[in-house]
Length: 174
Image 1: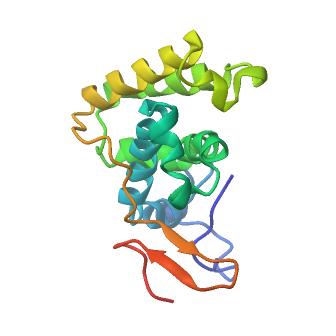
Image 2 (image 1 turned 30 degrees about the horizontal axis):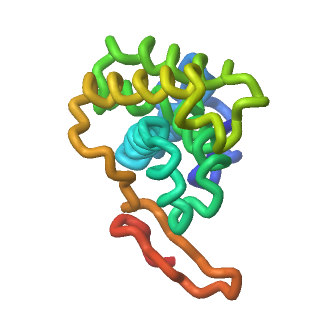
């Protein structure tokens, strides 16, 4: 998935050094735009790990923020590991490079959870889920994340009627 935060300049068809792409095909200008949002990408990684550190009751308490916590559990992690976003966090040194492989192994482990145990009844008593929870906590400890509170700074909750119910501290006005 490639996000484009700005309009491209099609007039300049001859790329200069500054516009040459990286190994993922992004121009320097695009990479600079991603750098501007690196705190958000970092928060996504940490929030995903925090959700995986929760037991069934803790995850269920997230319903007002996440609507469907079990679905969000996977989607939050999947978004956090979008290659360019994940790479940007490491490029900007918000997470030490030596933890990259540990995080990628965690993502693979989650990806390999069998579909039949993606259900509330398994979260607190299935060894796969218990192992995932231990791993999430270990990684959070390695990242020196003390709190296991989901960060809502970038969360915006809108009712079915379109009313803003909650607006995180870092959501910009439109």
